[in-house]
Each structure stands twice: as structure tokens, then as C-alpha cells.
Length: 266
Image (cartoon, rainbow, N blue to C red; front, side, top):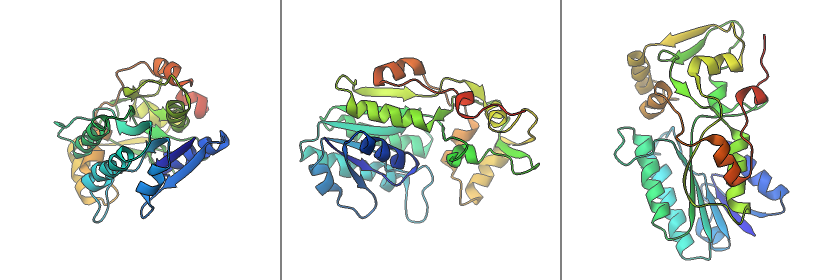
């Protein structure tokens, strides 16, 4: 078996490639400038992770999320690829006011319309372990006694998704012969407020500073490390419609709770 992985150098991509290699599966990692058509032409399946939530410079949601997917689909149609796996986001909708969610929905449509069996995981906020927290958790870790900045009231509901569970889901979609196709919401088993997530990453007495939604949205237009679409996702509820343990059963893994990964600290 050979698996092409786009976005192989990203947070999820690196771990997926390692997991596949450990299972003695040939990995064809793909990044910017690589021969995607050539690699996909030699693959049994494609895990499509390339894309962005924070386009920079000349990049855009269309070029990063939609056009890369069109490239994958075109190459897969000319090959013997038996399955496409795609990482999307909960709430993807072509009618969404959020530019990121619109682009993800357009990409989903290309995948589904390809005629190739497709598994799509609509994820939520992904976090890593303490030694490699990733951008989501990293943004909410206190630096000394300084407060952690949280956009909005901090009462917005989230279901933080452990990166190891994302890797397990992607691996299960490739490795399990009975893995289902379709679109699946993939969230973590803990439904909590954003403030509670911050406390779970730090300690119960961590200081939290809230930014009013209007001010947060204005900052998203001024700060090059943010985008209005990203800020909208941080300000609203982010929860899945499917029970995480049922999704885990279908793809062969057990979801991790936040305290499983980040041990509570006093």
C-alpha cells in the first residue's frame, strides 16, 4: 500500500506520515513544489491535509483550500486511487458568512463529486500534548504570571480535539477495510467553555483577560497573525453533532479527554 499525504510538513501531516511509516505503509509526502500528480498516480489512497486557516501574502482560502483540492481530485481521477481522506472543519457550508468555512465546503464538494470513495472529517480546535502544544493550545498557555488573553466572554463552548485522535482517525480511514465513507464531525469528548480549556492547560487560578467581541474582530483585521475568519471561529461555539466515542468506534480509536493529555495542575 502506498499513501500520498498532502500538507505532510504540517502539524497533523508530520504525525500521520510517521504513523503510516511505523505500520510499514509506503508514504509519499507532498508539499509545495512537489510532483503531486506523479505521487498520487502511484498511490492507493490520498490523505489531503494541505490548506490553511491563516493565509499569508499572496495565498488565499481559494488557492490553499479549494485549488489544492481540485489538483488532488484531478490527479486521483487519472489514477487507481481507491479512497480520498480529507480534513475539513465543523460548520463547513457554501452559504457560510465565514470565508474559511465556505472554502472548506467547496473543497468537500470536489471530493464527494470525484466519484472516488471519500471520507471527510470535520474537525474542531486541535491541540497537542504539553511538549508540543501546537498553535491552538500554545496561544492559551500562560507566560509567567501574565494573564491569558481570551477573545469574547470565554463562555463559548468548545470540544477540544487531541491531535493524536485526529491521526488515529485518519489512519483508521486508510488502514481499516471496513472504514466508512461520508462526512463525520470529529470533536473531543469534553464539552467545555473556552475559559475552562485555558484552566485545563494551566491551572485553576490562571489569570484570564477577555477581549470584547467587537474589539477582537477589529484586531483580527490589524494583526497579521490572525484573520477575521479565524477570529469568528474563536468567538463562537465549536461543537460536533456526532458522539466522539461512536466516531472512534467506527475508525478504531478511543478519544482522549483533555485531562488525559494535560494532567491537572494545582
